[in-house]
Image 1 (cartoon, rainbow, N blue to C red):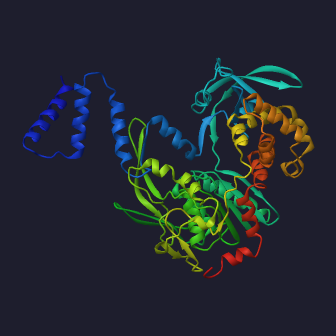
Image 2: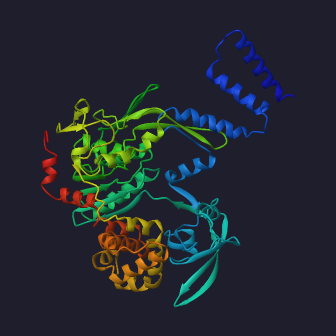
Image 3: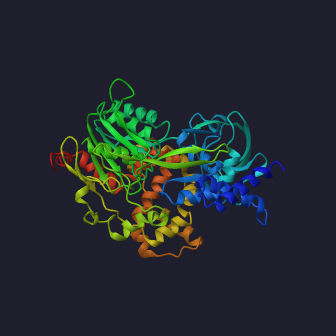
Length: 535
């Protein structure tokens, strides 16, 4: 009876107001509707699902980035940006429905108990995970858990032609999630840093990478933000604090109910780590949000050269509104603006989510990703850079100073089919399984590996045979056309599995047109020509 009273009161109130032709406040109208459905609908209803649907429907009428996530989705969204999670400390691949350990995190729980790269985890806490078609997410839930708790794993280890099963008890611990994929010297002057996200620990990782590269002689930097979807605004501001002069504006935000707020460059220490020396920033159509803040500020202050393709155009600020059950609503409250006042956000129509999602495909169809002259500049959105007064344009995303077209020549249908079947990953695992010691002894460092290791015709033939067993019909012409990318991917994956993640990018960058162009520019007089007054 007590539960029914508020509903009756609301219903009576709504009836009285309707009789008097009085308009209800929208929020009250929504509460009455939900109460009526939950109490009077002919069948039983899931109130939580109804409310979630209402929230989602409201947000869908707004911009493309306002969104709702349930408790599980919220945890998955926040975890990569938090900087760590609790688990056993491995990276892995699934091969033939078996978890294959690629690497153990240095100093992590798995390394401490003796797990090795190449081990197969076949059971977790007496539950088989091999050969049962268990989803990756379900396996991860079993391996992850509160810090300090134990998990029992059974491992199949192959060595010297024999197999053995070993049981391990692993105590879970905090496992770092790294933002810096790779940091290395390309030559004796040029450093390279690849960022995959802007997270809670990104500043510390960047500081470590910059200090290490400077000790090795770096006086020019290639910062790779390709495919970096962004993350925390503060992380971008902190990184710019080490690349710009103190006090320079990095970005500002402003919205209807959010007054303008300026974020200025502030180094973590006394002086910035790298505010002198050449900088080239690599971007592409998937570089978004904090990546655009970073590349936009570098460009606006004439601090460096931006190389690649026009960035995604995500310039809306979301504020999280958490609910007690762990779910969350992320509501757009402002826009990001670069120091020159350019709005990073690309145009959109409220409520037209599908149209917005197809933007990258539309760029491909229009030729923008292949031809620089297909990019449409709007004169009314032209501004000048802050030091050299070079003309640059707003209108959504950051347009690079140097355009690098998307080259799809080697990416044939045959290559896509082989990738889709997972044949390359499976072949790499099998190859590394049989050649790990041989490669490690033949190439003492990954520098030696990158320089001298070659993917042989026999290796490619084995890969193609594996793909054929998976149902990919052989195509000699397309195999030949895709041979360079097959060789590169195989070598990069083998190097990653035997050495570390940075090895992958050392190999990949020898193939990547954006990297090659950035390296060419930063080491030539072209850099000065681009960064000249009125250029």
